[in-house]
Structures are given as structure tokens and as C-alpha cells.
Amino acid sequence: MAPTPPRPPAETLFVWEGRDATGKKSRGEIRAANEAAARLQLRRQGIQVDRLKNVKMGRGRIVRKEIALFTRQLATMLQAGVPLLQAFDIAIRSSANPALARLLNEVRTHVAQGNPLSSAFSRFPEHFDRLYVALVAAGEHAGILDRLLERLATHQEKILAIQGKIRSALFYPTAVIVVAILVVALMMIFVIPQFKEIFASFGADLPLPTLVVIALSEFFVAWWWAILLAVTAAVILFLSLYRRSPALRDRVDHLLLRLPVVGLILTKAAIARWARTLATMFAAGVPLNEALVSVAAAAGNARYRDATRTVEQQIVQGVSLAVAMTETGVFPPMAAQMVSIGEESGQLDTMLTKVAEYYEREVDEAVASLSQLLEPVILVFLGVVIGGIVVAMYLPIFKMGEAVG
Image (cartoon, rainbow, N blue to C red):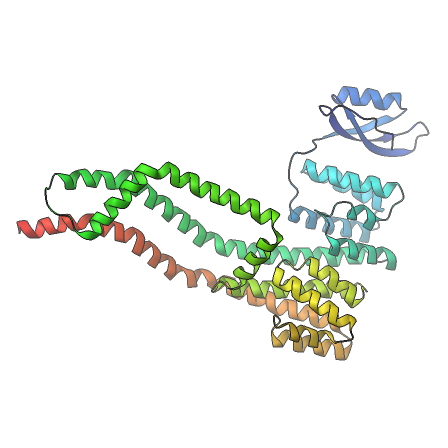
């Protein structure tokens, strides 16, 4: 790759492909003010440009689904006999996300300089975690990189599928509650004051529920801006503390597992993720204690991260995996029993996979019934809140009708 001199921040990054002065295919990156300037610089370096692509740095976001898709593509191409660097070229060209194309290009450049692929991935821990790097390293060491990438892609797809189902199940109740809050706020600010003016012309005493609703409405009308500001500030403060405070994140993780219905789903999802991750690592030939270190980092929940670290310490002391799992108190007896069978039969990875599949089915069934379980709760909530406001505002009208009658 041609050397890239330092450039002012205003310049744009370009990825190029072409041939050098000897006719050898080459590729790299260069910074220039525009495409014409980039081509001119490359010609001065003796590069005949075949392709030049603008990659916007700092723009765009790489999501985990894109990493999973790339992993699947890379595994498929390697199994088809495509050389590693050429496979990266294809993945970069087919990427619709400039940020992902930039990331893959930097990984490719690192590999082209003679470094292992696992080393290249380890330079970007925000996109390729310890589990990812460890599996790639195991694949390189054993000469089965394509197979382990396929297993890794399957692992990522399963984890993303579970997370997607949980998000989908929670979207409906969350959306309904948010809409209900907005409706109540609009009623308090715009509708109730109109009723207040009507009631003032009656010259009669109002029922207590009506007086309470009117008082709340007056408070909303007078202080809506302060309420909005306080809620916004609270959300921003919480998110800021959540990002900065590991203790707060751990506390939230523990509280989420204690939620009714939802906590049970999250617990089953965490066990499925834990079992599948460990099965993937162990099947790749990674020693159990080393695999548990990566599993702890990829646990996705503080409770199971801490439990995994405890299990890893006990494994080092000679305790069996099944016994160590049982002593933590966070793994169901069925999971520990299946692990025990796997240890005794020498098929630990197979039994861990069965544990993962069992709890993934449990998550599917629980998510499917979640909407049915939450629907009555949502209806009661809407009936009590919105229906209560409506009834409170119509009580004076009903009493007037009775008096006239």
C-alpha cells in the first residue's frame, strides 16, 4: 500500500484499487481534497487506478447485524476457496455502509501487512469482542478458519434473533403506554380547561373527582414546561450515568431480571446466550477455563457475568463445570444436569448446544404469549387512567341531569 502522508482534517478518505509500476494488483487508502486530487496523487506514485471509492470517516454507525452478515459472507467465501484478501475486497465493495467499508478496509490493510486476522480484529474491540477474536485465533491456529467463522456467524445470528424477538415483544406495550401518557397530557393541557370554563358557569359545587382532575390540569397548564424539562433532564442524566457507571449498569441488569414476566424471559435468554457461547468456544478447541473468560465478557448481563467468573475460578481449582454452575445459584438444575451428562460422556459442546436450543425455544414461547399476558394489563391501565378522567369530567353533567329531572 502506498504511504499516506498526513493531511488536513478537511480532506476526504478514499479507498483505491489498481496496479503498481510492476503491474501487480494493489490497493490502499489515500486522503485528498477531492477525487481528482486523489487520482493525481496516485499517478505520481506510479499507481494505475482501476477503482476509487469515497469513504466518509466518522459518519454512519455499524450495527451488530452488519457484523454478523459480514461474518457469514466471509465464512461462505473462504469455504468457496476465495483467498482471504480477495474476500475482504468483495465484502468492502458490497458494503452499503461507508463506516463498515472503512472498518473492513483497515482490517484488510492490517492483514495485508502480514498480521494474523485475529490480531487485525482485536484492534477494534467495539465491533469484534473477545469471543470473536478468540474464535478467529483458534480457527487460524487449527487451520479451520472457514468452519469457525461459520459457527461464529451462526452464534451471532442466534443471539441477534433472541434479542430481536424480545424487543419486538416489548415494543407494543411500550408504544401503548407512551401514547397513553401523551393523550393524558394533551387532555390535561387543552381539553380539561374547556370543561373548567363550562363548569364555572354552572355556579354549583363540583364532585371531588372533578376537582382533583381540574387541579391536576391547572398544574399541568402552569408547569408543563418545567415537567418536560425535568423529565428530559432526568432521562439524559440517567443515560449519562448508565454509560459511565459500571455499578449502575450492574444494578439495572439485576433489576431487569426481577421484573415480572419480562424478567423470566430475560433470564431464559441469558442462559441460552451463555450456553451457546460456551458451546461455540469449547467446540473450537478453546480450553474450558479460557473459554469461560470470553463467555463472561460476552454474557450480556452482570449477574451471569459474575456467575461465570465464579465458575471459572472453581474450574481452575478442579471443580466440575456442572457442580460450579449449581453452586452459583443462577443456573437451573436442568441446565446443570445436562452439562453433567455432557462432561461424563465427553460431549460437553453438544449438550451445551442442546441447553441453548431448549432455552431459545422457551424464549420463543414466552415472547409469543407475552402480548396476550400484557394486553389485559394495558387495557386496565388505559381504563383506569383515561376512563377515570373522562368519568370525573362528566360527573357534574350527570348530577345536573338528575337535578333537572
